[in-house]
Length: 257
Image (cartoon, rainbow, N blue to C red):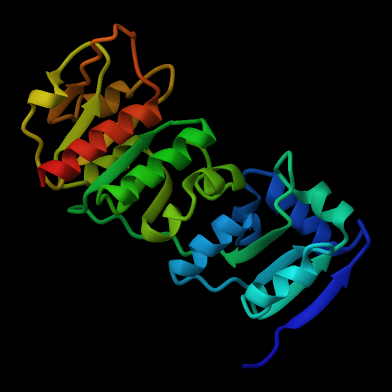
């Protein structure tokens, strides 16, 4: 196997460092650069297991000597950064010491009959990443993000998704009207009305619509719903976090297939 090219960088003014800093810290920089940044060995390993081939592998200088055994052939190009540079770029309180740069996957075409999760302006990156993990785990292969949702390929969403991105067909930035192209029944979550989840007969395939953390599902999508579903909460809480509700609902659908 041909050894990848290796470049060491120690300057903050290096163009690669500047671009990587934007990619790591600007939530939408991936759209302009056409690349995504995966930080941390767990996420990088998950990407490799899903068949991804990074364009560039990046390592902190102090970590590179021990990283070579496992990661030397991970990418066609390897960059070793001075520790201070890697720490400055990192989006983590404790820098992970390595990361991958991948080419941004091409956006998928919407599949009308696919089991789908619709993100209706879900804005918290951690919630979005967690929902992607649940979608992948419970057999939903298509995720459609309405405009106003967190950027799906931002570093925070990628970290929370922990590799789920690479098992899903992701479509982002759509208008509410585009959801009407789905040919499967729409199910919307509600904290106060609708059928109880544990008693409902759930269709498969279907599309679960998960709404904004504060405002819930928009009236435009709720009007299209085939079912409105609520989750029993015998402990008496007013509502559930959207990612927790998603996990419960998507698991119920997957188990009922």
